[in-house]
Length: 133
Figure 1 (spheres, one colour):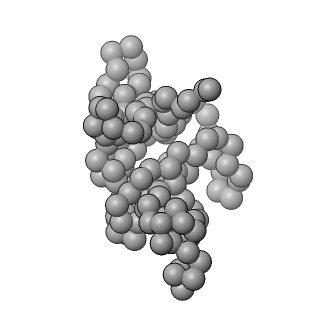
Figure 2 (figure 1 turned 90 degrees about the vertical axis):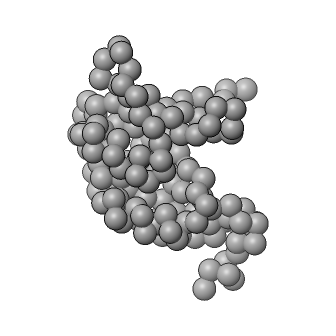
C-alpha cells in the first residue's frame, strides 16, 4: 500500500511561509544543504504524522476561485475556533468555513499568504450538523 510519507509547500516568498506555518502550528524549518529547500518538522519523532519540505514556487500562484489541483493536507488542531482566529492574525484566509464531519470532528479549509490551501481538523466525535447551529 502506498502511504504518504512527505509533503511539499510551494512558496513565492519562502521566508513569509516559514514565518506563517511556524506561527500557525509551531512547525520547525531547517535549510537543506542541497539548495533552496527547507525541511519541515511537524511534530515529535515517533508520533503519528508526516514531515515535509518547503521550496520556492517555480510557476504562478494559484488563481483565486480556481479548483484545487493538488493534494490538500489537513492538520490536526486542538481548538479550531482559536486556530481560525490565529489564521487571520497571520494574514491567512478562510477558504471553506468550519463545518462538522459527523462523528469525527470539525473541519475548515484555509489559504496561507501565498494562496496554498490546507485543512484543519479538530477531532470531536460529538460533532454533528445539529450542533453546528
